[in-house]
Every structure is written in structure tokens, then in C-alpha cells.
Length: 222
Image (cartoon, rainbow, N blue to C red; front, side, top):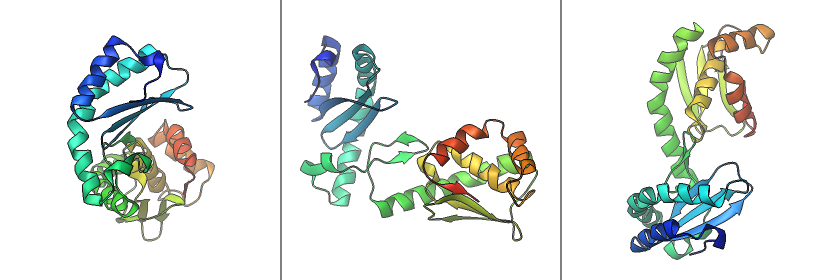
């Protein structure tokens, strides 16, 4: 256990004991992060707390997450066993898995992540295109997924074919919706003219937030 003195309290002690019964140790560290982050690993619950969060707030957040950690710990252990990762060294492996922007209680290697993301994006796409195509007033003939690191999406306007990056499910689903809207709007305007961006804004007024989020991750949109 590694809990700074500022966080130690009777309330947290009860949670630490519950975790101990499930063979899980609690580690809390202060970091320059925006939100309280939880990472469940074999026999460890790692918590990163923003510098501006009070110890009382942090303790409350940890206490609420304890049932989640205990319930998901067997799955985490099994996942590591399937991957052949040494459980004693699991804390050194930085393989956080996000699905629609939410950290998952297990890890995957890069190849497994691609399969995992492809599956979830394939399942989500039909409903998302059914939602946004009538709003944009444009319809794609074909949608494909591709392992793209530098682009979140692209559009072949002549074939009316849209490509989506298989890595999109790592981010909030609204990011994927924005990429879909962006590429559908290219079926109206093949460039990034003022008319194009007006079409995007009309369809999705809050697009700028999701655009900025993806831009901050280094990818672009054609």
C-alpha cells in the first residue's frame, strides 16, 4: 500500500481493508492530470489525483470505485494470464485501454487493441450513420475502417466512400460522430471552404469541441 498521509482516514481505511480481502493494494499519487484516474492491475488499484483536488474529494472518489475494482479484479487477472504477462511485473506495463473515452479494467497489446476497436466501431457505425446522414443530407455508398495513425477519417467524394480510423473508439463517441459529420459534409463540399464549415456547424453546432480534442491527439481529417 502506498497512500500519502493526507489521504489516510477511517473511511479510506475501511476501503483499504476491503481491497486487501480481494488481494488488491491501493496506490495513490498526486500528478499533473485533469481528472482522477483509476487503473486496475493485477493486485493493484492505481489512483492518480490532480494537484488541485482536495484529499477529502479524492477519498470519496476512491471509496466509490472500490466495488468496481473488486468486481473487475478477476477479469483483470484472467486477461493478464491470457496475455502471458508476469503478474508480479504487471505494474510496470503501461497499457491503458480506453473505450469511448472511458478507461477499461483490463489491458490489451497493440494487435489486440486494433481488433477490439475495430469490433466496437463496426458495431456502432450503422446507428451513427443512420443518425447523421439525414441530418447532413448526404449519404455514403460505402464505409470502411482503416488503421490510420495520422488521419481520423477521409472521404472519396467521387465514389462516396468514407474511411474511418480504427483508433477512434479510444475517444468519446462524440468524436466519432464529428468525424462522420465532417466526412459526410465533404459529399456537399469537397474542400474545406467557408461553406463546408458552415455545413458542419449547421449539422453539429458543438463540433469545435470534438474537433479540438482530436486535433490535440495529432490526427487530421481529410
